[in-house]
Image 1 (tube, rainbow, N blue to C red):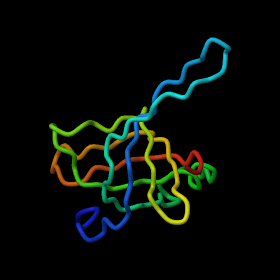
Image 2: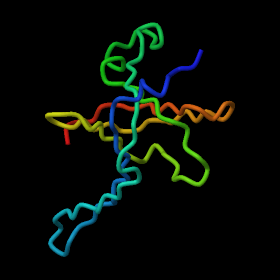
Image 3: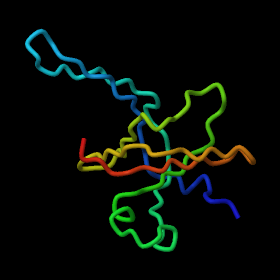
Image 4: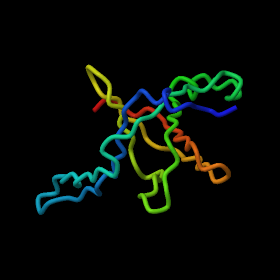
Amino acid sequence: MAIAQTGDLNERIQIVSKGKSSTDEYGDPIPGENKIIYTKLFAMERTQKADEIAGNLEVLRDQVQFIIRHRRRTEPLITSDMTLIHLIKPQNKEYRIKTVDYDTQYGEWDVIICERTGQV
């Protein structure tokens, strides 16, 4: 059984590479420029079940999985140094990407495992 169907991908996400911050001549922080890797991807949000996490409720509350179509080799890789933005109303949610489980066997679905960081 497939982990998703095309019609299940009803959430929109963005993948952003955070720019490195620096400091100016006065020592004030200068935020780096963010680069949008994927402007809009359709995804399915899937929270982990309690039996998937060994009794750690804090992790269960803040961890989310997003299922997307498999990325081709010609498309940019999604890595753990990127941020996922869940585009929902009224306020977008930001997640730190922990890992990406690429479907190398069937090439259908990739799973992005994230941790909630804050609001955008």
